[in-house]
Image (cartoon, rainbow, N blue to C red; front, side, top):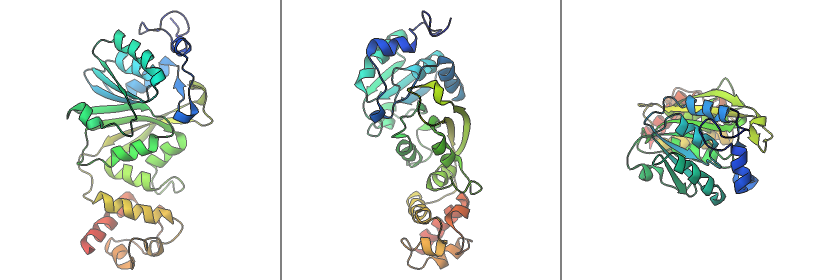
Length: 287
């Protein structure tokens, strides 16, 4: 049975009908682009790995297309964080269809303490992130202390350009930057597949990609704050040599750069993640 006739395969009404009935037009100010294709939402849910009995956190569920897929694929508990109160009645219908398995949180994901909501339990994060808060959310999850954090994996949708920035290496100089260093230091990150513009309502102007990040249990020891300071300075002037770009952090950067086994004439886009880690450790030893 197609999603446009009668009930969808999960026994709930088609998403288009839900959106029309509740008057849920996507709002650009909230970075909303709704996914109506239940085959696609099912693919995203399956990409997160076996979900049976797992706790999943979803950010920005909107009318619940991905939420339904997560529950239909066996997630034991889904915590859905939604700030658009217009969507809450539609999500409540899903919760009634899956008794005791969907917890709806009315709030801003940037302000909600997810670790407290989970009560110390581990969870996966699976989300079609609102475009306007996707990067800040990811940086917050990657900056969590202590490490490893409470999340066991991230399966997230980003604009293709942002996805490329997350997984970039020095071989992809145009995309390689602070986000790639932080992600590469603490996680194994990869792009799983692209999502065409036509899959969304309204269709965005860009292609989207599903990115998966799995935390490294034992990343190279490093002071995260120093790493962030160094990458901010280095990539803030990425065309300059390190001996010049790092002066906002170090009055005389050359000895620290050389102690890290790097060339003072190198540029930020040429330095691998391990090089920045060595640089942060050299700085830590010098102060």
